[in-house]
Image (cartoon, rainbow, N blue to C red; front, side, top):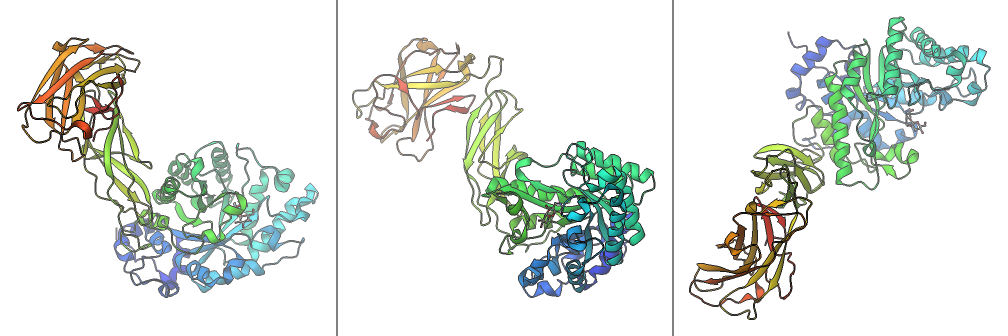
Length: 623
Ligand code: 9MR
């Protein structure tokens, strides 16, 4: 295939979008082949050039056009007098949509008396900036003047057809696509009652589409709705409607998916597959009102979800060849409909309320194929997560925690690697790696990421070892300690210990180790150990002393206690282990600062003596 010429940009975008709305598969494929590398070198439209640096990325519409799509924004008439706002509106997008000014209550507030001044202002703005217009909307139950609702049923069809003829006729040739019918369904997939449905049943949709085709034969005709973005009853109802309209030869060119998403409600199920099944009916599909709101205040978790949703919507559209473009329901929080409609929610748009680009804008750019730097200017990676530790293990899982990383725009999450392969992500500073093999050591690292896709280097690795299997259930162990040493400055240390199984299953003792940290002081670096008495028998108790490598005061060595055999039943204790050790030159210790030492002379839980099962820390805090 010979690649087609690049889609025109900048002041020629009008032509590019007109062509886009009837784009063929061949031009999509050619654009995909031809443009990404060249896009970054294309001139920035003059409106943007005044306010951004030479390193500014391509516009959203340029990036989308390189993928054979348009990128659009809603707008509204009061906003058109906000010069900083219109600088972006007029440069970043290939298509704009009036959020209100083509609705029935504005265009025909009194029967037969049309008022197109506000809609015309949006069209004029678009034309002055080389942008196309999506018309929104001809037939909708809302923002409908009272006179329509008051009509006798017998007059509603003619009023509807006159309205469509008047409005779509007025904008003939100036509106590239119309949301002819908006929101015809209830969420359960039944038809919504409205003056139109009440008067004509579902045939009002057919009549509306036919009237729109007659008024402007070149305009693409859409049905548009919300909560049809993923699969479900409402989406099925829309699918069945479009299938039946196509089968009956009713003029329908596209289906609009509003995509008003919210981080607290999850991402629509199978959006890409859903768009594809509509496309397979022989219609275009479009994302028509995208925004992703959240319950305020925003935090890293919500922002990460929002970024993911914007990315997934963009990817879904790009994956469906008949998805012609994406419209965001205004580009800035300054004019978003969300706070007015959902109290306490917001931050739904790509630019903030001061018209500053947000990090999520870079996420959308990246999803559209942009690989260059620049963007919101954020090329700074988060700090490397520190303090990665194993906080627990079962026979099939290892739990991790780490210290939060920091970032100039905020950390949005962490990737977790096991043996060098990413095994998951977390928006919190904890993660549990599951599906592991018993009694096996695994190496873990984590890295931090931000909304612009910058990632930190990987953390220092930590080893987590799963518990032994055996089907007895994961026991939970703790260690208790009593100080049986009357002198903190003599030549022996006498930790008396007992191990307690607080879990609901037996634990095999041979994989258990207990560590008591102390300072070796001057003198010999070799040690002797003794077990004077153990309820379970000193013969099954092992002891050794090792240098710890820890720089924590009082913790340069540890006594490690193990067991050669045996099992500790649920709820059972080993009973006391009367332990003692000394340096081989019998030089004195100075125990008062020893990390694991306590002064209690009856047994008590010891948080600074650690218990490991199969090498994994299950009790206490290691230095
Ligand atoms: O953005 C529009 C807002 O300014 C209006 O107050 C609101 C009134 O219903 O309509 C908004 O746009 C809606 C669109 O026309 C249809 N889908 C839902 C949009 C958000 O409410």
